[in-house]
Image (tube, rainbow, N blue to C red; front, side, top):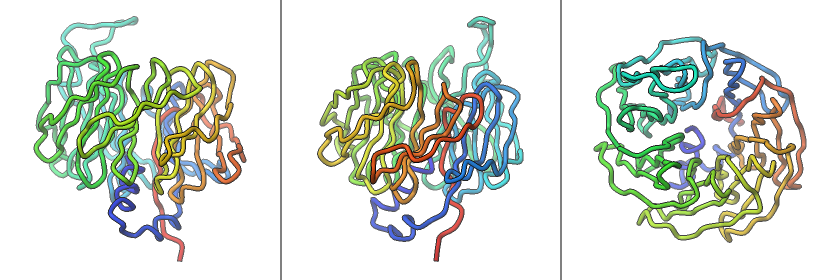
Length: 340
C-alpha cells in the first residue's frame, strides 16, 4: 500500500522532488519459510526479519511508515509489526476470520483473511475474507485497536486490494466473478461494481487517476478511469497467467508479470503500449512487482526462484539478482529518510 501513498503525493503535485530522492527498504513476504524480510534492495542485505507461524501473504503499511500489517490466511489472523524493526506489536483476531464449517485439504476453519489495505489517513485497516462463508471484508479501527464491522459483498475470489491515493476509494478485484468492487473508505459503502473479464486480481494506480488491473486468467491488463469507474482500455500483453500489477510513482510505466509465460511486460502508461517484455524465469514463474520511489528501478520478488531481481528502467535489463527467502511473493516499499 505504500506505493499507493507515494503515487498520491505525486498526483497532488506535492513533494515530488523529495519523493524521488527518498531512501527506502523493501519489506518482502516469503511464503514457505513463513518469513517477512526487511531488505536493502541495492545490495540484497537482510536488515531485519520476522518469522510468522504460518504463511504471510499480503502486507499494508501505514502512511507514517511505522506500522506494518501482514495477513496470514492459513492462521486466520493479521500480525502487526513495527515496520522499522519487524518486531511484533500485536495480532488481530476476530470471529469474522473463522468459518463454522471447515473446508480444504487439510480441512481448515480459517476464512482466509488475505487482501489487506490501509486508508490514506492511516485510521482504518481493511481485510478481505477470501474463503468466508459470506464473502466480504472486515474493517479494523487502527487507533482503537479493534474490529468495528464486516461488509458483506457476496462475490467470490477476492485475493488482493488497494486504496487509491487522494480519493480514499478502495478497489477490490474478484477473479472468480470477473468484477471489481469499489468502496468509499469514508462511508464504507459500495459505490460501483466494475465488470472486468479475465479474472482480475492485481491493482495499482497512476498519478493521473487511472486504475490498472492485471487479469490472472488471460494475462491481460485493464485500465479504468477512476473519475467514472469505467473501463477505458484493455491491453493484450504477450504474457499469460497469474501475476500482479504495479505503476511507477512518476506514472511513466506499468509492470505486469505472468506466471505461465515466465515474463514481465513493461508498459508505457501514457501510450498504453508494451515497451519491453523481459524473461525472468522458466515457466511456471510468479513475480510480484514493486517500483522504487524514484521510478528508476523495478523490483521483482521471484516466487519460484526464491530471489529478488532489480530491473534498471533506463536500459530495461536485469541489473542484479539476490537469493532471498524460499518463495517471496508480496510486500511493500518502506521510505526511510530523504536525501539532502
